[in-house]
Image (tube, rainbow, N blue to C red):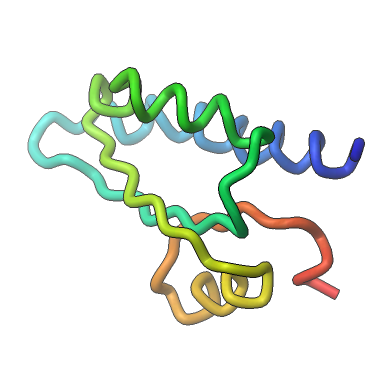
Length: 93
């Protein structure tokens, strides 16, 4: 449970740190392809930010896809069909 919370905090932290970088460019909207293992309450802050348009304020469009398992999310990252993956540590082992 603590590892999941720590992973979620890390991923959201990376997203928050990337916002100013992408927000500086005014020309085009940046698309971030995000793949998640499953819809989970642990990702609620991300869902709230997406639904309230917080990423749109900085010119970021999140393309959210459900990977259907950590192995599929890791495959999506490795094949570069996803930029960020939300999953547990079991896929790296």
